[in-house]
Amino acid sequence: MTASTHVAFSAVCWFVSIASVNTAPRIEHLAVAGFGSLLPDIDIPTSGIGRPFFPIAQRINRLVGHRTLTHSLLGLLLFALLILPLYLLGYRGISLALLLGYASHILLDQVNVMGVDLFWPGRLRAVLFLNERYRIAVAGKGEYILLCALIVVLLLLYPVASAGLKRSLHLVLGDIQSAVQDFRALDETNEVEAVVAATDTLSGEKVSGVYDVIGAPSNTALLINHKGRPRLLSEGDGAHLKPHRVWVRPKEARSVSVERIRMAGRTLWDLEGLLHDRRAYLFGELQAADPAFLGAHFVASPDRFATVRWGDGKLRLEYATLGELDAIRAAPIAEGEVVIKYLDSPPARAGGSGEAGSVMALTFRAASLDAVKVRVGDQVAKGDLLALRDDGSEIQSLMTDIRAEKEQGAANAQLSRLALQEVDAETHKVREELERSEQETTHFQRAAAFFPKELKAARLAREKAQAKSQELAVKREKVIHQAAATEQEYRRRLRHIEERLEQKRKEREVLAPVSGEIVGRWEVPQDQFIKVHLALRTGSNGRPAEERKEER
Image 1 (cartoon, helix red, strand yellow):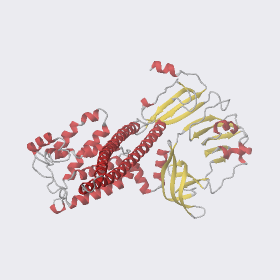
Image 2 (cartoon, rainbow, N blue to C red):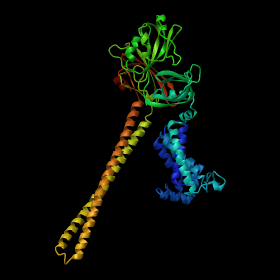
Image 3 (spheres, rainbow, N blue to C red):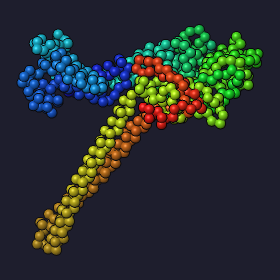
């Protein structure tokens, strides 16, 4: 097969592999897989990879021939051993992409008419189709059709690889359980919206559209904001909307933190200082000092989810907002606590807002234990770094893209300067010819009767020089215009990458929302990260940052 077909097939294999493990696609790994797909043809000097390494390719070809050692299981094993140091040094993605590309070449060549010596040094030829008419000749019509098919498959695979196989399958299924799983995976770092097709259980009307997701009360239910009301999307009892098809997607990045407030002997007015102009939901179970006062203010509505419920002398909050509690803010609370789920960083308390020395609970994900930068007893100020959410590979990739973009921009600028210099040099030469022809025309005009042929030739040369001068002026304008357009496009691409880099840096860092002392820390290992719980006592005096740096 030709190099382009091998590269396309390796890209298909790479997209399938990363989608199956739900890993985000990286352009450098795709390029490495494409390079790896060319390596088996090092055994032929005229191949795309053989020409740059002609002495090596010629030597291998003379020793073992084409499609033997480098196209065999033994060759694949030797290549895996060759790139093993890359894997051990931490370049796992690159080494696996190389190996995948190499293996894809061997697999694709088995579709060829001649097949490959898969079991070399054995002479048994391996082909995918025993019937020769189904095999494909190199650079023939069949390979062209295969290449076009691979390109179409690539276009279809890209969105699947970007979302991951799991989320793509969930998109195909469109069931509520899959939507809940995806929501819980996205909720910690993103606003989430649901694409819904459902039936209203009260009116029987068809409901379809995109709605903000408030939460997931259970494994089979989503709470969405439907026309300004919290409504339950579920297949179970008590649902307001019965889903026919639903899937969720990230809307915009956000940070989530949690704070617990003991409410015994207090009123809901005390939450005003914490929640003023903040986006947050309230959870908890409160025992009222005057049950009759609270019970008179709540009547369940059948067309909305009861975020505030009253029963058995207790007030239960689930995805409630402070505005929903206006009527009972002055009611004294006998016991219980409120859990505040901030949808952005909670504000620092100032001027007596809140309770001095209260403990705030923070929950976030971190790449590893080493990515958590604080421990029990540390004093942190507002805005201090608490942890890193990932290993920074995406940031490194974007920085590499910026360096490559700048190098390409410098190269393009140099090419534009050389092109302009070439046009200027040619223009200077034409101007000299024009000046010389004008001098000859003037000279022969004085004795036109004696030199008619010379005068005609001089005038013709002058006209040609003038036409050439005008042509070069137009060409110079085109060069300048093209250089300006190239520079503008370069700056646009660079600005886009830099904006993505800044966004990724902000998303990666977990910062302290308030000043205080770390009084507790717990970690819960997950599949590819750890979930960290910190207890932060505000207004406390722990070890300052300078002492922590000296100790570490």
